[in-house]
Amino acid sequence: MLALDGVTKVYRTGVFGGGDLTAVRDVSFEVQPGEVVSLIGESGSGKTTIGRMILRLTSVSGGTITLDGVDVSTVKGGGLRGYYRKVQGVFQDPFSSYNPIFKADRVFAMIREAYFPGVGGAEWRHKVGASLEAVRLDPDQVLGKYPHQLSGGQLQRLLIARALLLDIRLLVADEIISMLDASTRIDVLNLLADLKARGLGILFITHDLSLGNYVSEKTVILRRGAVVEMGATERVFGNPLHPYTRKLLASVPQLHKRWEPLAAEPEPADGQPLVRAEDDHFVAGGVRR
Amino acid sequence: MSTVSLRVENLKVWYRTLRGDVQALDDVTFTVADGEIMGLAGESGSGKSTLGKSLIRLDGRMRHVGGTVELDGKELPIWDSGKMNGFRFKEVSIIPQYAMSAMNPTRKIGRLVEDLLESRGVGFAGVRAELDRRLALVELSRDVLDRYPIELSGGMKQRMVMVLSTLLNPSLLIADEVTSALDVSTQKAVAETLVGFRDRGFVKSMIVITHDVSLVYQIADTIMVMYAGKLAEKAPTDVLVGAPRHPYTQALISSLPEVGVRYAEKRLTGIPGTPPSLLHPPAGCRFRDRCPLAFDKCLEEPPFVEIEPDHFVACWKAS
Image (cartoon, rainbow over all chains, first blue to last red; front, top):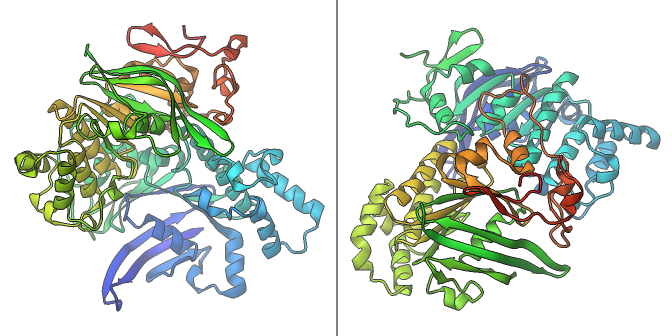
């Protein structure tokens, strides 16, 4: 469905754009319908930039992003509107995604104006109801409320419901639960996993390895803009081959398992090509022993 | 771990708002032993940061309503900001939540340290050797003293603030969400540095405030869980994580995904509902509305009692 092929992003830096900063370097992966792919990286790894390029919020410097074979960066005008019917994003901070002056359900009205001007009132209410049901929100509790009256989890679920109104095929979820409390974040995470059953593809961008591991079928690990390891989630987490992945895994605080001193492994340099290590498991620079 | 370092009794700190008092910290009683690292865990609005701040500096909206705080046998005058100046930095110190922006950007770090020491009547020359030793310990070169905060990376600033906060060997250190803005690998290094500070005797006891139970599990001796302004449970780390007795702690711990737990194999569940408003909190147990075990008696407030040695729980079903 969605395919990234050699995607690169270079930011111009400096007063006169004299310097270059490569934020994303030659990244290729795919998201299939009904699949959650987690994109994991630390700050500065380019994970958010990749999400923004897919959502057309920033331009692509090199390589291509295609949705069902159509190059995303060439769609314009009405085509772009059609693209946003299929691809939507939800971001980290639910409290700043809303305009605090208006009621939170205004995000639904805006979708109606832009995409469904011909739909009648009763039909629209039915559609909103179905969408809220899909994200397990009670309409009485959330409709007609201001953002400050709702919890972070409710606001994030409203935004997902808004995206579902459009019959989207791909959801880009950028750190959507990092600002939520532990007891509520798992519900939003379960919701994402349930949406797979609708055939939705989800790109789950996160810095938290345990969340990515819990929810996704495929995992892509980024370091300084490049993929260091990717493949089926159980292979990447069960048998991490790249020293960087091993270091990340050893540093995640876990319950029931204390940190162990980790023997320092030399980390291979950037820019090594991905090599197939086993079925559905690729590692930059190949397997070293 | 026998002698008590910090003793907090019936502490109440409320926030003044136009709509009334928010009872953010309501009748909190606990002790921290000498040499103990206590993890303080809770969700947003549970009062954990309010508790941390109360022990060092009440901000303008916070009001000390009742209760006492004793550190090494001396009472801390937490209601009097002026008197607390004699204790801050020397006896009680804090690593603030946003350590990255905690330093004055217009001063070189060395000057900043000098000013800070001067304000406490300590000569810079006298501690210079110790400062250099501690900078080396956290792998900062002594050149950082000639630099401005903006020239340091986030992790470096964090370590600089850690060295600064503990420079005068305070008895109690409060670390407020010090690792939450950091990457996992830096997070581990910072957390281990905290333990190192205790082991080397730079600080006697420590309260590590966090929303992340798995992080304090790594470094703390005991963990205390707060819910809606009240203490829910305090126990040695392995007991709290392995055999929690408060229904809130149990639900919280079982809702955390770990590496290795997958949705396809084991579906975790959250806690339905939201915490009560602290503007007019309900009488009785504040977790009642979300608790699967709630019964009639929960309309009365459960006391925070010791059910086993060092294991305190505020729940009728646990005692």
